[in-house]
Image (tube, rainbow, N blue to C red; front, side, top):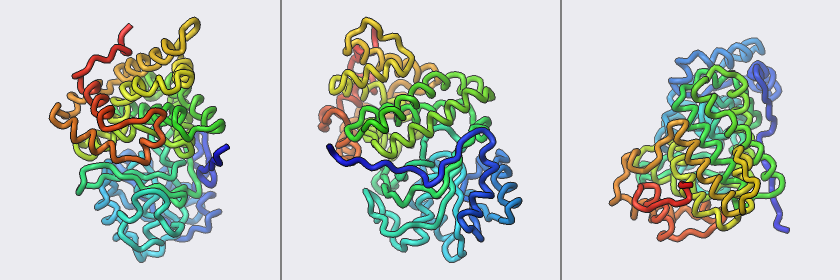
Length: 394
């Protein structure tokens, strides 16, 4: 039996209204000088008051840096690191979506590892632990608050790159669904589908295990039953609670079982065409699932059932196909683009995209079915619309 490791945040706090705990948690970490890292959109929503007020009540004041960019490039990290270097911060609080949380995680280790951030790219290349962090997601999507991954745009190579290190795990993660009530429909859809991708990919990944399987299946159930309501009736707190918990569980599963080809094929879309991470993942999911399903029909049949599909009387192949169709329909229902054409990709781009994706061994080696450049290009062609996808039809 291959050894497995299970890692998550040091302390995990969940529940509606749980953000009120942040001041007490900061004091437990012996914080004296705090900086909040976020973006301008979060600052404009007024959500920061829910973080600052409990900190103030605990006798702490916090500086605010609100310059995190969407799909952040390495240059954004370097700019923010220059602002906090030498100011003796002993607690960093990340507030926002995946971009803000990923930036916060890496800034914390940049304060204690004084080298070019690009040297951290890859697996376990961060040498020293960072300063303590508290991560507070305001979207139900990336699960970044419980993963030891952080993804950034390399503007030189025009591709997304990952930093993977246990030192990126936060001291505390606080997941409060109330903080997601103001998220607009398009962002709710993209981030929610991103979380669903995390759950499905980690459930079917080579590194999946009994611990992650149960967590991933529950995430699929929670997200698939609630995402439509969360997108179109965003003030419905129960749907938001399901999405927040589903995203968290998907993040825990992702953080320990990893993901596969969907993410590998999505990274070049983000780097070259600026397609948001959640949109790229959701668009590609049905096409990659169709390719992967034959490698483990039982697991893909399980996915169909977790999605709420009636698979009684179906063969494993039919049930797996039902999962693919259900995912394509769900993406359409919440407004995710259904083809690469819709996000600015042309047919002439596909060979280069396939070549770039084929280099992402960290993810492809965890995919349940082996992919060469040829198969990757075929998947891109199906997602572009050049090849018929019979599994999507009754």
